[in-house]
Image (cartoon, chains in turn purple, green):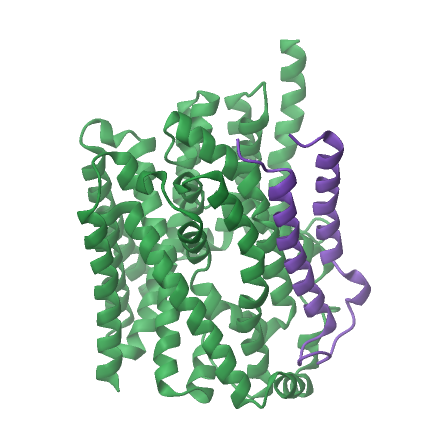
Length: 66
Length: 466
């Protein structure tokens, strides 16, 4: 079983990802910046992929088969 | 070409029916095999059945349409929320899978009712799930009719009839196994069709950068969020809504029970965001590019107009079949999950064999869907539109009660019921009065009310027991 501090770190990580997904700092920015898309769309994509990596680590350290 | 289209649709439906017949042939005795495929779905099958069930006709038709009107923000609100949602595979799915295996639970209401030892809570949850799922099922059938109509020359209602009867045939015969297998085929089909559509359209428009620049010159507002629909509050609202609403869809919840082991659930959770990251981008890009290409089309017709204009004819048929796959994979799971709930939660199977009852109710529900689809097509039924508009909120307010019952040591069924009823009352109030609190979607406020009721009621219960 993972310790409380590891569980807290993972919970904080999830909320951090949610917070980072709300990229209010570039809310009024945008143009066909990269591959015809605004930067912030790619930022959203990066967060989605980072969430997949988070789940990978989560399944290794928190969700263990019983 | 119409003959080819007609043959393609016929062959496709026959193939799905064939899978249903085969699933019926290898079916083992007992309701666990019929309703949950003996709880034996491995990773890939579980992942495809979950995603194909989750991605409805909206993925093919609604998504590009929203992006055409609202812009790139559509990717953010859909992809981020759907990527965060699989955390519920751990919070709810793992518990449901484990308790389901131990105690034989088959439906979501059985779990909440069984764990709280309350039949009333079970029936209340079941009713809410059925009420808010039926409109979605109807819309899938109607969508199927709209897709088949131009391909085959039959009417939209004729198409809805053919689709619903085909689904009833293979699902009633093969049960969950047929639903899972067809979901996998349909999932692979729709993902491939979407990727091909993206490649061909991008190529025809001169590549990603050229297509994007052309759209920007015509509609720069699609590239920014400020001043439009996408406020930070709306962004946050959709995240919360998807996380709590998606697992409350009975057709998705029932998939938790079908996992062979925890590894299958975990792997599905990991795969979800990776697949969404690029798959949700394609329909958004196509919708935005349509503005640059000067395409004008009716509601939910942007994707069809783009593939008609920028792809070869064979791909047009393929994408139309992909869209059909998307809605059929959702509809078959919805139909089967509703039938399962009628059998298990209302104990219909006690008076007759559960499998036979499941088959009978699947057909009865299919007939009911045909009637509602007909009424919807004739009049655009107000009741159905109302339920459809509020179905995500109506289901999401059930989530706090599930978390409470699964994790609380001092669970009170009446409190869980009050939480659900309070949430649903506010869903109805918000549906008639567009009250915005802090710019949040009304559904999120209703979820907050459900959760607050539980927290506020739980504290005195603990004190009394101490």
